[in-house]
Amino acid sequence: MKPPKDKYEIVSEMGKRRGYFWPSYEIYGGVGGFITYGPLGSALKRNLETKFRKFYLQPLAIVEIESPVIMPGTVLEASGHVENFKEPTVGCVKCQRKFRADHLLQEFGKMTDTQTEKLDLDAVMEEIQKLGIKCPDCGGDFNKAEQFMTMFTTTIGPYSDSIGYGRPEAAQGIFVEFKRIFESMRNRLPLGVAQIGQALRNEISPRQGPVRLREFTIIDIEFFLDPEDKKCLIINEVENETLRFLLAENKQKENPEITTMTIKEALTKGIIQEEWLAYFMAKAKQLLILLGVPEDKQRFIEKLDYERAHYSKQGFDQEVYLDRWGWTEVSGHNYRTDFDLARHMNASGVDLTAFKETEDGGKRFVPHVIEPSFGLDRLVYTVLEYAYNKQGKRNVLSLPRDLAPMHASVFPLVNKDGLMEKADEVYHMLADSGFVLNWDHSGSIGRRYARADEVGIPIGITVDYQTLEDNTVTLRDRTSWTQVRTKLDELPELLCNYFANKIDFNGLGTLIER
Image (cartoon, rainbow, N blue to C red; front, top):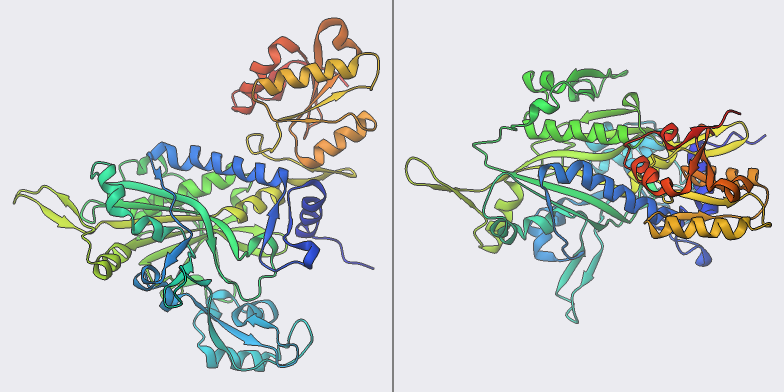
C-alpha cells in the first residue's frame, strides 16, 4: 500500500498538469536545481513581485536598480564571497555521486543546521561514519569530505585569467553602485535600494524542487543609514506586532521553545538590536499572512555567532512550515553594518562615504546597512502549498485574489443557441478592460468549474439563457461556490473593485439562493 501523498507531491503534480512549474530540460532527463515556470506559474510569480513592491517597497520609497548577473572576480573577492561561499561535500566511492555533507547529516542523522554548522570537515566525516550514513542512490561509502565553492565560475571574454562569477546574491550589485545611486538620490539617508533578479548558486545536490535551486530569483533590499542616527521614526506602526522567535539561547536545547513577544518588547530586551531590523521583520510577517501563511506557521530563528554570514552582526531567518520540508527559510534579515561598503572602498580605492553637516562643519562616514532578503521562488511555492485544499473530491487552489494568474473564467452554459457568441462578447469586453481571462467551453459546466477551481481562478462567469433576456450573468466564487447575479454593464467596475480588495464577493451582485 502506497503512503499518502504529501502536499509537495500533490502541488508538484498539479504544477506540471496545469502549467505552474516543472523540472527543466525534461526531454533530456532533467538537471537538478532548475525549474521552468509555465504560463500560470510565470504569471503568479509576476503578480507576487507586484504585490511585494506595493506592500514592501513603495511605502518607504525604496528604489530599484538592475545590475549584471555576471560579476568580476575582484568584486566577490572584496566582498568575502570567494573566501566564504563554500560548503562541505562528500563523494560516493561506488557511483561517484556527490552530496552536500551537512544535508546528509540533517536528512539521515536528524541533526539540525545549528549542529552541522559548527562542524569542520573532519568532524563531518566522523559523524557520517558514526551514524552509518550511506549513499542515498546506491548505498556506497563516502570518501573524505572537502570544501566546494558554491558559486558558478566563468571567464569574461577570451582571457582565461579574467575570472568572473555568477552572482550568488543581488546585494553586491547595489553596494558597488552605491556612489552613483546615492548621488542620483540627492545624497540623502536613510536610503533604501532593492534589486529583484536572478542569482546563481552551484548547489551540490539539490533535491527539494523549488525550495533549493541553482538558478533562482532573489529580492535583496539594502537600507542605508547614518550609524549615528539609526532610529526608525515609524517603528510605532509595528511595535505591537507579535513575532514568534526561536532564540539563539534556546536553539541547542533538546526541545527548543518558541518565545512570542511584541516588537516593542524585543527591542526593549535587546533581542533585536536595531529598530529598522525589527521594522522589516514585522513587515515580513505581515506580508506572509497576506500570502496565506498563518501566524502560527511562521517563526524567526536567531542566528548564533558561528551561523551568521560573514557580513552579519545580527541575523534572523524567517521560516515557514512546509508539509514535506518542515521549517524552511523564506527570508533573511541581517544587520550588515558598514562591512560591504568598507570592503569595496578599500579594494577599489573609490570613496563610498556619505557626508553630513555637524557643529564642527561636517564629517564623512561609511553608511551602515539593514538587509531584508527574500527568495521569490520559495515564496511562490509557499503560496501554492498554502492555497491548496480539498473540497470533497475536488482540488481547489484558493490563491489570494490579487495573486491569481487569471482573474476570471468565461463559460457559455452550452455551445448553441447564441450563447457561444454572447460569451465571446463578454470575454472581449472584459479583456479590453484589462482583465486576464480563461475561456472554456469544453465539457459540462460542472467539469469546467472544477478545472477553474484547481487552477485557482477566483471567479467563474457563466453566460446562460437569462443573459440573452436581461444582459445579466452568473458569477461563481471559486472557494465558497457562492453565486451572484450581475448586470453586464456594471461588471468591469465591480471586478476592478473586487480585485483591489475594496469589496468582497457578495458585493459583486445579487445572491442566488441554492
